[in-house]
Length: 243
Ligand code: F6R
Image (cartoon, rainbow, N blue to C red; front, side, top):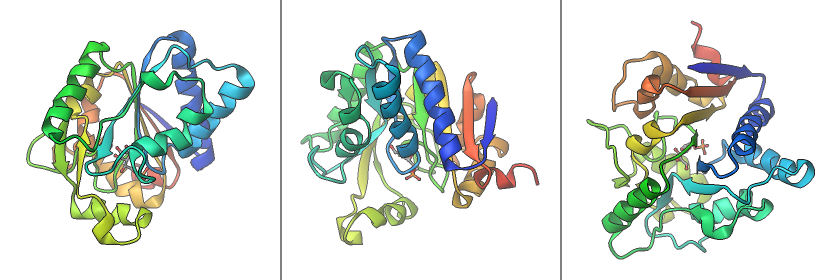
């Protein structure tokens, strides 16, 4: 594992963008696994700047997102498709048809999960997977559970995750309770995993993920077994790593 502790959120974001840019420059036809949430916004902002000012070329890149809420249409302002359009896709020259996010509005969400899994396999898997970390240790929407699920699947979001997501919705009732998420199989199959973590409220989750037992009770702990894991965090998130 490669652990890079940065001073703050901006420094973390810059470093993450540099690593992703290196991946894109070395392998212009790569498959990037992308995440939503507040963590990667600064990194995406920097990638947009690099696209505009430094010629970082995304025209050959394919992207696959980790997850999507069940019940939200792509146009819904809180859907993860909208998030990606707003924070990254509209600002770079990636081909729109090469950006993939699970659909949250299929009649049969299990069939959509299966389609998504097959689609990623057809692409040859993910070359670099960007991840954020849930305060409960989730990656994608692989929530704490009794077992790890390898394939893309539908999940009931935990109370903790629903509460954490409430800030984006008018009321708790409007927060989606289910999602489709890539499983830990595709994440672990990725050639490289880049985990970004910032803030004091993630310090325990980061400590448990990197130093605790490997258990589905802390889904990110499985990343300890990944042969090419880079963790970039800020000092606050790292504060419990050296007790
Ligand atoms: C988002 C995702 C989630 C988030 C995690 C952290 O696609 O899969 O696992 O990465 O919930 O969210 P933020 O960054 O908002 O703290």
